[in-house]
Amino acid sequence: MAQIKKAIIPAAGLGTRFLPATKTVPKEMLTLVDAPIICYVVEEAVQAGIEDIILIAGRGKHAIEDFFDTSYELEDRLAKDGKLDLLERIIKIRNQANIISIRQKQALGLGHAILAGLPVIGSDPFAVLLGDEITMGFHNEPNVTKQLADSFAQTNYSTVSIMNVPENQVRKYGIAEVEEGASSPFRVKSFIEKPDPGTTKSRWALPGRYVFSNKIMSILKEAKPTLHGEIQLTDSMNVLCHNDAVFARTFTAKRFDAGDKLGYLEANIELALNRPELRSEFAKYLIELAQQLKVNN
Ligand code: G1P
Image (cartoon, rainbow, N blue to C red):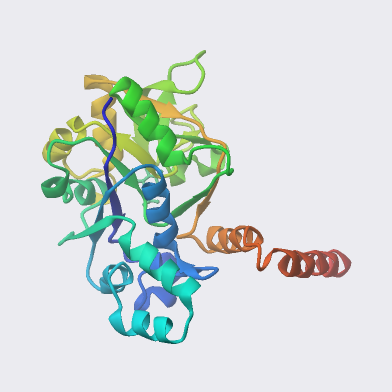
């Protein structure tokens, strides 16, 4: 059984959808309740059994590296003040995995960012979690990355998550065309990056969770820029599903694009409602607000 122990988290984007906040703060460091977005992504990877996390970072992303590093002064202060719960949480965050940071020297696209992880990935299979996508699962089921890793362990084939989107959203995502008449996990026939509406019948979009066999790396090495002059990961996945096989799985967890304003706000609300210390008062506030909105509209 091939276990997935390594993951790449690309976090090199400029975050233009969140300007001006992201002028000085990387979008992955924007706060969801009380922790940065990237913290939730790393926790998902760790809960899926991943030990080595390769952050592909661009310029100005030191804050992400510092977040997973030791902060002696802070830890000393929390210990002296007896704030042991907080201290424990801070130590757990920094100790949960080996965080290895690699610079993507040019922003040449997602495929290029993944290939930048090759020196650490070597010949191993690996997961990819996009650094601004959050998933929120149910307590009694394995998270989205764990489900992909389990599929890989059984089949040795690359497996990616898919979700159903309406037709007018198709052009925002990588799209998987899958074998018809089957059920999840589907075998993928082709992948297309952000197709124009009408050019595909498929509504299966890629939400940013993948597990790859190492074969994807040799394909990425040969990949050329296409859409927007970038090396698209989806193009290499398309080659992989023809040369080898790729499977696509649906999932039941909620997924938020926290790199988008609306998705970010929704994620904040849902995560806050999940916190025992906030839940009842926050829910009361939301109910009152919803009533006011109803009256005013
Ligand atoms: C990237 C991928 C795309 C995927 C999407 C998920 O696009 O290229 O295939 O569906 O993430 O959010 P981006 O949103 O970076 O343009």
